[in-house]
Image (cartoon, rainbow, N blue to C red; front, side, top):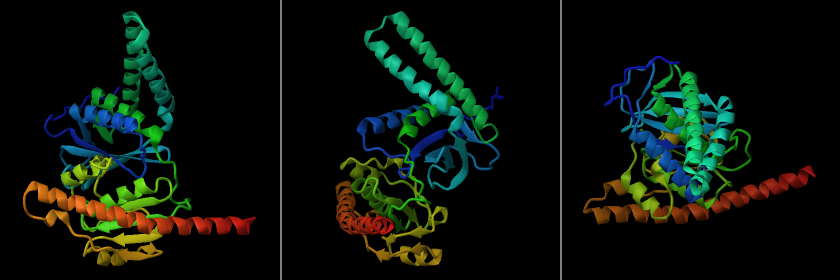
Length: 328
């Protein structure tokens, strides 16, 4: 049993949760709705703090799935500067996750047809499972990320909600073409382009986005992308320094300062292109005129992404077929 930390209710808490769209993927609205509920419950009530760091909260939590690990990436909620990151192996949780879905389905079935006594029995089993998983979660994260039992329960629910839909593509071994979009702060232009590319070419591309410097989430981006069914609340801004991969088949810069930053980074790129895109954050006027600027950017990016990346995926497919023919 972990010793209970004395949490500061104003500082020791998570105020935002985002999911990595590169590794947690779904176009099913029911699945996305389940993620949102789990995120809402976690943010609504939690006591949380990274151990052994000087930074104080509140915090933003960015969740990725890499191989057999959940990456819990703690960041500043305004600047998204990294504070602490920890890999949590899914292996010890596999049986608990399977039991979670089994008991959850039994509970939903019981609500429809069972007696109140049967419902209570299933609910007790569900609470017991949550408590067991929460204690294991706290133990595995001891002296890394600290949280109370209720927070651990809610975090386990979020892990269960997202892990079945994790992308299992190993980018180091994948033959899929890779694309990187770069803009000033990875807040508007590059994340919009990346999200549009993922939706237009699901499973056909590996898409990343990054900024020259650190930025923060933009509410107008969320609004105009939501209009076309893309949830941008999962996006956390990243800088080029956080890129793991150094090779991309295509790098597309979208802001005036991006080409020089890409050149300094010395990326291995099959091609580098510059798309000069207006920055809608610079538009003045009332709310309607500002939103219209974001919509215009979205629509222009959508057209260009489809046209250019269709060429890239077709060329990749031809190379793959040629290679298969040579091997035969």
